[in-house]
Length: 424
Image 1: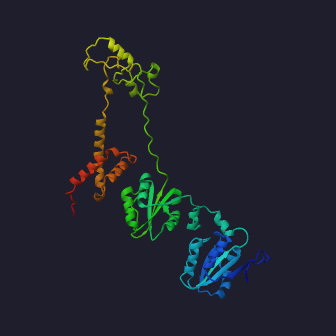
Image 2: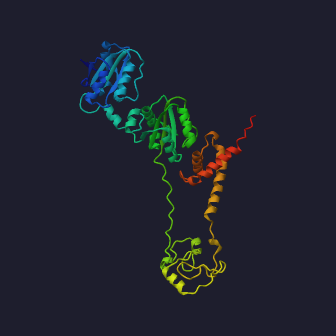
Image 3: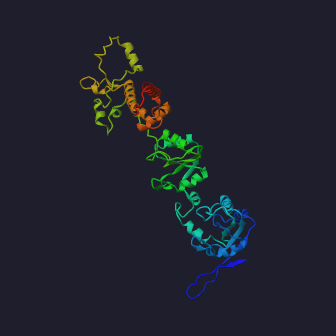
């Protein structure tokens, strides 16, 4: 049967009335088969009407509007079925085929009535589908499901350990949040609609890691204790209970610092052209260069075949004392300075002194850092990570001081074991 819907007047002429074909189906499961067989995609509208028998449905559907438009202006066919629980049947179909042109699921109660499906059987998409196709991927008129299909945000599912590693790599450029009673699929839909500091997350971040956890509160507290608050100004307001934790990252993380280029070693006997100081040297470096452009640093003698032969033919002479020895430049007999003395500015610190000074700096840093960390969670990896973050060092830079760091924080625990806070 066909339903004739009343069309408005245009001037003095009445346009041709539009028709909507209605077909009753046995149950709601036939909606899924109909949509899959006819390849409607998401170009459909599924809804329901409470406390309405099938005899009255054909009359009621004439006055139904979808997005302020009469249904006959958008669709050509209507399929309906009688249901004892319209919300349960409608939600079951939407879970199977998607929301279609809807923004959310049906808002009906669990009562009896009719569930109906509106489609366009003629060629081409509906006018409502064309309007939604022209909207941006983050438009609020789109459903969360449609936003998720269009978004460029990359989603990954991982465990908390991997999320902690990614958060540390991002160097505080992350946003942590959680939802209780939510699985990963629903968490993705929440991410594409959420805002972080008033800005849409899809505009601010490029990647998102999600994990289903047994307790959202303990999971977020664990990540915050290990990685900090990130871009948040305060702690994550999580609730206890099972749910989903999401970690949003602004990018692939900052690149590691470029290695310092070390100049190549000079040859044992360089030509005068090669020994000439290059242009662009600093004044400090020029002061360390001798009259022939060779660095004024005492060099060890180099044994060659010619020098061995000369030594064999020349009678041995007593070796001068260190005070009488005059350092010469490599490969030549010229002195290092005009007066034959080694400049005092050339004496640099040894590797031992550098190590001791660096250790003193670490001890001062740890003296201020350790009181801010929870005593029950202190460990060498955690203390090293927090120390590298406070010193703005890349991860792993202080590995060679790992034993010293372990010694310092353990000594801190021993010295502060008997201290208690004064309670008023």
